[in-house]
Amino acid sequence: MMELGGNEIPRRERRAILRRAFIDSVPVLMGYTTMGFVAGVLLAAKGDVVLAPLWAFLSSALWVTGTMSIAGVGEIAQRASWAAFALMTLAVNFRYAFYGFTMLTRWKDVPILRKAYLILMLTDENYALEAACPLKDPRRNLYYCTALSVLNHSYWVVGLTVGAIVVSVLGHVVDPDRLRAWTNGMEFSMAALFIVILTDQIRARFAKK
Image (cartoon, rainbow, N blue to C red; front, top):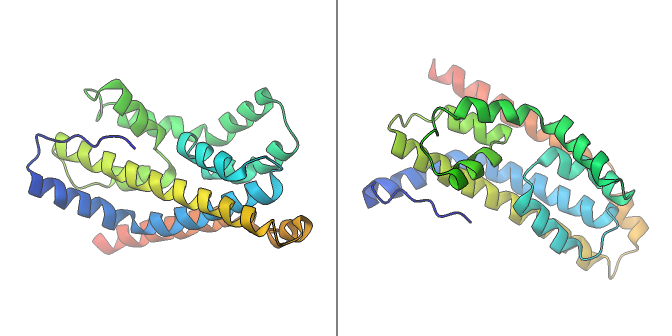
C-alpha cells in the first residue's frame, strides 16, 4: 500500500488522525469486507476463471469498484470482449469522474502519483467521508484522506480475496453447480450496502443539526 507521508505533522497528531480515519472507516470496513466477500464468492463460483483467488486479489488491488466487481462477473464468465467490458465499466462508474473534479483544487499541490491514487480511491463511501472531513489544515486533511483511502482499499482487497479463497476451497468438496445455486441473489448486496451507507450519512448529518 501507499506510503502515507505526513512527516511534517507531529507523531502524536498523526496517530490521532489515523485513529480518526479508522473510526470513520468502521462502517466501510463492515460494508467492504462483506460486499468484497460476496464479489469474491461470485467471481470464484460463477466467473469461470482459473486461479480465482489470484484474480480476486489483483482485481481488488487494481480495480476498486464494487458495482463492476459484482455486475462484471457475468461478462467475465461469458468472455466478453475487452472493448465491451471497458465501455460497460466507463458507463457504470462515470460518476466518479465528478468526485475527482471536486477534489482537484484541494489536492492541486499533491505529487501526481499520490493524487492519482487518491482519485482512484474516490468511491461513493470514500468521497462522502473525505468531503465531510472537519480537518481544514491542508496537510492534515491530506494525511486523513490518504489514511482513509489506504484503510478502505485494504478492506476491499481482504474481503474479495477471502471470498474467492473460501469458494475455491469449498469447490473441492461441494458440487460446483450447487455452489453457483447457493450464490443466487447475492448480487443485490451492492444495492443494500449503498442504502445502508446513505441512510447512515443522512442520519449523521441531521444529528449535527
